[in-house]
Image 1 (cartoon, helix red, strand yellow):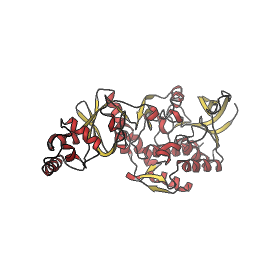
Image 2 (cartoon, helix red, strand yellow):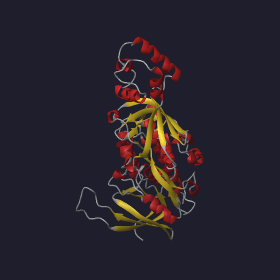
Image 3 (cartoon, helix red, strand yellow):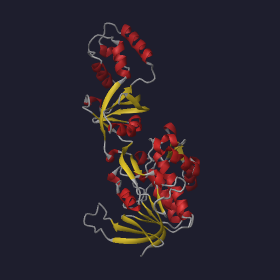
Image 4 (cartoon, rainbow, N blue to C red):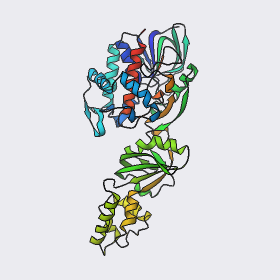
Length: 418
């Protein structure tokens, strides 16, 4: 077996780079195998290229409920403040945005990736790009890792397919999830896990826009506003969120919708789902009715269009009025039905958009098969599993990247203890 090393890391994403760096710092020889042409390909696209790499406050409640007991132990082993210290030690300066989101001061995701890669190289770690792992098998003294050379997409005549075999005492699987296949996401990591004895729960897109059923007027496309949302399923409120709501030509997006998307995807598997939007969340229902009644008196004798002007974006006011049975150019008034239309603006949901539009993958490797302190496999000694391959996903705001750093750092440290 050629290309022997202490640790092979499969994937040069967020968790893979963090794992490789910590293992190299501990003195292990480390080789990272990455199928993309550059390390950190998905990392470079996070936060619209600004890299919302963490949040000022991180805890188990920021993640899917079944993962919270696991995360309580992981965050006890590596408190969130220590992850921030990890980046400070790399020389990263950051600033705080809305809702505690942390961004590099440069607002450049490539700077975060460069700091990780530069430190890894300084510690002797190596990255082999355009190298896709096809199998990981236990072998004498550790593992046999088989990989093939990937031809660059921009070189149509370039040869690919050459195979290589690597020997490693330990392997860290950090291959990432299925989101954003156009920049390297895929299901290859799950295919590596199953032959090693791991269960993989069904995966689905998360933090993803939602497609509406028979979407109403296309003129709402592009309208943004602050709203409070309720996800309705089986006659009850399944989840709630607040923040920016974006109407699109296919349905709904924006931070408030993305935060509801995981619950929406789960609920859709069992029946119809709708999102009810409070378009004026800062005004209580009774107060809104009173306000509109006062406006009706003030604008008596004028058309409803003048009565409504200035409340919200005119495009959504027109749709709300139509839903309330109010003629846009009819007489001003009808405060109660119009208030109800604004406070309970309903959109029936058909499905999420696909993995190509999803920020995160829900589902993955069963957490009961992973040690939450070391991220070591309980099925295959010497194997570690990190990041999006695990059945952990959080809400938007830097929480998913924070988990990637946490799992990678802990796995890298543990894997280097021979």
